[in-house]
Each structure stands twice: as C-alpha cells, then as structure tokens.
Length: 359
Image 1 (cartoon, one colour):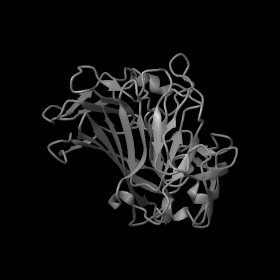
Image 2 (cartoon, rainbow, N blue to C red):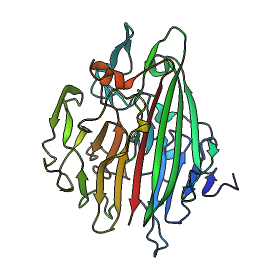
Image 3 (cartoon, one colour):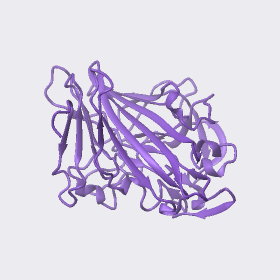
C-alpha cells in the first residue's frame, strides 16, 4: 500500500493468520503514530515522541505480535467492542415483544458482546480514504456485516469504523468514528448496539499506573450492584471529588470501575457525531511529562483502573487504565435509557472519540 502518505502495512504481524495485518499511521510532524490490527480492529500502538527525542513512547498496553492476542487471559487489550459494550444484566433483554437470551460471561451477565464479540472478528483490509487535512494521516475505513442472531443479537448490522490521526503540538491525536445501520431481515424492526474501544493506557515509566495524575470532568456515575450492573440511579461517585480536583493514582487505590455520565447530555440522540466533543478525563505523569486527554461525543464513559488485569508473565493489576466512551450500561433493560442503544430501519447509530497524546 505505497503512495499513501502516513500509511504503511506490516503483513508479518501475525504468523498464524496472514489476514491479520498491522496497519500503521504516522502524522506529518513525525511525532505521533498509531497502529491497528485486522483482528478486533485492535489498537496496538499509540505513541508519541518529544520533538527533540528519537524514541517513541507507546502508552497503549499491547502484545508484541498478533498471535498473542488470542490468549485466554487477554483482557480486551486495545479491542473494538460490540455488538454491545459492557454488561447486559443476566444476558437477557426484550425487543419488539421478543425475549432474547445471550451468553452469560461475567458474574452471570453478558459482557462486551458475548463469547465471540467484535474483538475476535478479523475485519477485511480497510478502504483508504483521503486525509481530512494537511496535518492528518489518511483515514482507514473498516466495514463488517454482523449477521442476524450473531451471538444471539437480533438484526443484521452494517458496521463501519474509521481511524485516522492528526498533528498536535508535542504529539498528536487519534480519532475513532463508529457507525451502524440496520439492514435486515425484513421481520426485524429494531436492533441494539453500543460500541467502544477497550485500550489500556499507561503514560508513566513504571509497571503500574501509580503517580498518574487524573482529572475527570464529571463525578456523576451510574450506581451499580455488587456485580457491576446499573440500578438505574445516577449518583456522585464517592472516589471522585465533587470539585473535580485531580486524583493521584496509587499502586492500589483508588479502585474505580464505573460508568460516568455527562450531566445534561441528550440521551435521545442516536447518532452523536454532530455533537461537540466533551473531555472525559485528562491524565499527566510527572516522570515522563506525557499528557493524555480523552474526548467523546457520547453521553457516558467507563473509567477502569485495571484491578483485574492479569496477563501471566507480562501485565499485572493496574498496569493500565481505560477510558471507554459509550452509551449507558445495560440501557436496553431500562425503559428511560433504551432509546440510546436501539436502532431501527433507516436510522443510523454513530459516535466519535478522540485521544490526544503529547509532551
């Protein structure tokens, strides 16, 4: 794939599957790069370098080659998550009068699309679209037809995912754009969808996220049961200061695995891409001097500080933290939230998320 400025392909990324390549984007300023695999549209590298330094610093937890992503203990590193991100209570929901039971994979609930979610799909090579501007890479557009009753979910969906990066002072930014449309079958009027990315970030210089300074823009969170499904209440999170002052992450605390919501967000919007980006959180590490900012058009995001990460011999608890933009968790089972994840014929689900990394 030569001739496309800022885009190269590593066809040797996965010795076990030649269809699983590594697609590499670089910004014109030469200070930022990101790479993605066909399997799970997984973000492998998200890296920046100071203009005066030759070495890139990859802040995204990853494996060295494509084969390793098939490990049973892979905690969704960098993966594209769907058809429904996060949890569906008891793996059950009702749509258009029909009850559905899907795989129960976590505390009796369905998690991240079931046993074979989009994180395990090998997507075809992308369509290469022109760069949006002189300071951007080309766009990579991946598509996938998710069949009716795949993992038990009703409706055939056309999924489109676009990745591109752009210059920023001292680094760059990655954009993730998601789109879904309902194709069929004719007797299915609605489907449910909630898409996210499950990257784990470590912007420091230690095996854990300790000493990272994290600032959230909201402390409103979805109250959950002891098995992490929402009760339906929105409450202030006890570990996030009401004044939203900066939290310093330690080796063990604070332990957070909750969905935060933007107060006042319009949860009736199915395609949020026309809405302004809102900052989920910003992070800084005093040792590396790296900054990470997550922004999204979505009404909600999950902050997970990695307590359960355990990749034998490679990564332990709190190796990285996640900022997963999404719709409300288990929205399909809450009547007042259901519309934000329910897509009908001639409707489009869409979202946009941005991660900026810079010195």
